[in-house]
Length: 483
Image 1 (tube, rainbow, N blue to C red):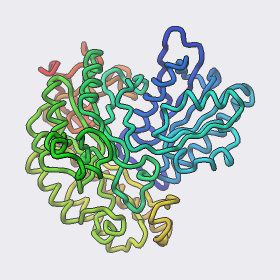
Image 2 (cartoon, helix red, strand yellow):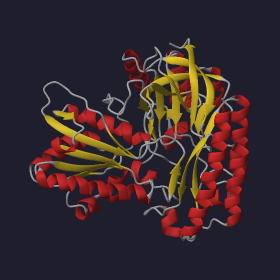
Image 3 (cartoon, rainbow, N blue to C red):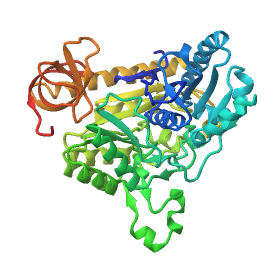
Image 4 (cartoon, rainbow, N blue to C red):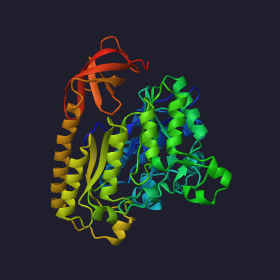
């Protein structure tokens, strides 16, 4: 990719597997782009529409309703959606009764403009309005365009049991928060997903119990900023100081939620994403260190290694504070893997700022990363107030240098595992060979090994014999005691 790079196995668009409910006669084709939260949201949408007579299908041509769950984080993501709508349009010419809807962040950002710009689109639904889909579909049936992009102060979908469409039957996403209060100047998320709201811990534990009862083995707790999780009875986090003393005394923060999950489900493996450096509490690290079933991996976006650029981005931490947090992680969880988000060529970034980013990477030596060239997003403070003044050829060169350094560090980190034995949860077949299983260790590194007599969902101890910068190659020794 010319303008972005990911050193990790990650699909940009995912068509979800089918779920059939007896008696449903209508067919839903739903496709997701962007973050894990979008994938989880699509499962919520499928659950809501299942009650309206829809079963999902993998065949676009068979669908009565086509929904695309969108991302606005970068310009390229929106361009991909526009191209996908052209494909839908070609199918709709053959099947004019097919209805097309746009969900998610791009829908929230463009609102009514989507209906004007993309004539194929029948409905536009923002992330907090999925419960209104039955009413919106009725409006379409009555010949009207339908739109609901109202953001909510309390919607968490905590009572909706997601249809596990984007699942291997082993690992699943559980949303714990929605929205973001961190107004980074480059980011559209606060505008497309609203303010932070946390979910009732008991509803989270119930969802995990349902997954455990159906033999899921790994849960990823999801939020735009999981470290901001704070339950004190409902409502926006910003109102916490106004809550009663009783509510404050009984509040549950993210470290406490992790403790509750790990203790209640000792055989379940837990991950979480995404963390914000300014909000990560040391109590979270101590909780991770205490429980073997909380994975030793943190995705810790930094965006830049320059304090000056971080300030321009409105990141509420400095380079030095970030490095101090990394030092604490290394001290409390010595085997913890770290990954990053990095933006090359943000507004006003100098060559010295770029060198600061490279030197920070040298200091941390991330296991892998998600790296992008800056693209201006309409509606953000950066787009309104800051000139996009770094030439594209400079952005690309800096991005290439970041990518190359990350590849070096990724190989160094995987080599560290050679000769060691790691616990792996088998998730499926290797993409390159049907004779090998693929899974991940606690540090979120992909491990490949011979199938032998193991099966999907097994925890297996694997001795690592070799590696690439992204994959560990090993030999299964025995079942883990976590089975």
